[in-house]
Length: 381
Ligand code: FES
Image 1: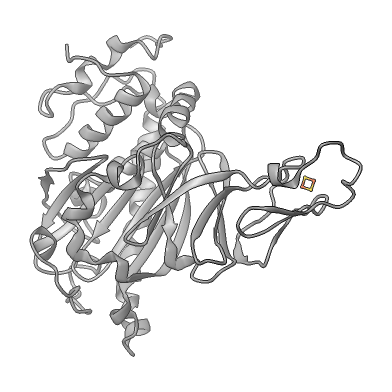
Image 2: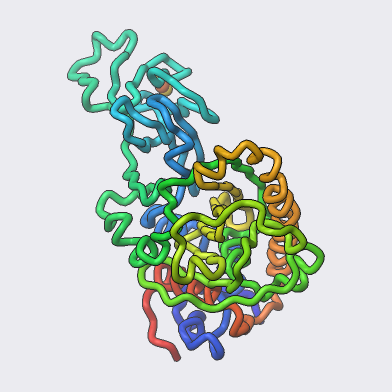
């Protein structure tokens, strides 16, 4: 295929919307082009609800974490009333980034010229500004970012006119209600630099087509069914009566979440909340795989492990949980490796648009979701 210059021409995307057994994958430049990536930032990451962490990671007033989401530096902080808030991590004087990492503060003080903000974002201290004509502190509070919470999962949205988080999630809260995620806590969070486009990792997180080859020595072959869904998510369900958060050779060490019923009771969900967070929901715990784009070919992966409070309170928790961490520490590098391999191969200008297996329904859904936002709605050819 010659080098394509009109990468946003709808003609290149018509076969994506065909049924799974007839469709094609997104073209290679959707994973390699900085121009395509910039459109994704504008039309996807700055418009969607993006998962940023759990509310229990900032349990006390003044607790904060910082992160960069699609290039946007943000602060997540719990205010004095106990409400998690999100702000742009940029001083309203000359724009310095103010907080790094995580911690606890009584106020936010800019490291450059010492402007001070309350943990509610209000500007409270401005040295040597008395002579500024018409300057009003109340007009220069921290820039707010919408933050809403479902079952302890915090999401932010940069679009002030967006729908609510619950409207965005559709029927996911109802389908996942019996997991009782309000009652879980984060026990570990690990981050990895990825040499791949964000979509490559999101796709990999929600298909089991690759498991016999990539995870043959660790997880082994897995089978999964497609889950009907409404809203901005898509999922597969892997039937089974045991947790899949330990290696197949380990028996289920922790008790099941009390009250599980329906599909959650009889298997594991891998649910991609668009754009880029996979919730891996099994009988006794859950873990997330959140992918934050850095550029067209680089991403940051956050892997968070969550267990019910009653499980964490067990005297043997710290010992037994090592089996779970071992499973994640084995499988995650395997996925990190293979996604970098895919990115490397996509550099070839000779690649033709690939076909998909029946075993990749969420990959298909993500391709259509991205295409609709970056290119627009198209009738299939
Ligand atoms: Fe923050 Fe000057 S940039 S006080």
